Length: 364
Image (cartoon, rainbow, N blue to C red):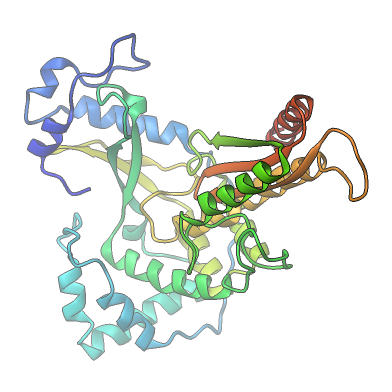
């Protein structure tokens, strides 16, 4: 993320043939080490437009909250050492040194406690710096080919780490993906991304297992891949916080996220140029420590709808006819896959229609 303007300029190359949606870099820009402030302002407006509108988030405070200083000390030492300095000159190495200072750890612990108790976070922590990161296999001359990575104050990231650990511990009470029965609390079993002890390999292995069953039974295997456009930005903040609460996230973590979610401002940086600050909309901010967990909780509603659509096509036990024999929904972050075995082409069409209807119903 912390690339020099020269490296950024070298990365900006001419795009594919055809009319681009919005051209932000010209061929001349690709040969110039420094790109202008116009691009920085365009990126800021683009990312502000793609995120969900800011909504009212109810403050959630815990007046008697107390935090263990040892957890804060671990978070100070646990930041990625190779990461660069933030806009204020702080770096992970400085934080590691500060972790050995008892007075600093004590004061910083008190600050985090006050945020949870009062529901108010420092304004400096709410200033978001947007760095555009190009998407794979997309033209780097198009504005739509970049995703937003939000950088915040290093001390804010340390606080996010502390409460992210609390939330992950609270959300760990879930069954293993694709095998366990759902439980009242926790992330959806189909969500295997950002989960301890799970990985991307689970989905293809489960798909191969279903394919072998299809071969033995001489039936069709159907795989559907769903790509969500602007998944993180489109998640409303209030609904995301509520989804985390419903999933069983820790109360201090909810209070801390709520305090950081309001009154944010953003600016975009391209090379050495930085756009003026403007109010930041809602949505999940990619780059923040808690972003993956927030999406994992928010996506549960969509995964439930897809599950119901899939189950509606299953052939009841002991019955015969066209339909789905077996299937499951799996999700790695915002990449959703549906695997199903069906016994006819008509059953495949009905399955596609049921999944489409489930998505359309949820979107309304």
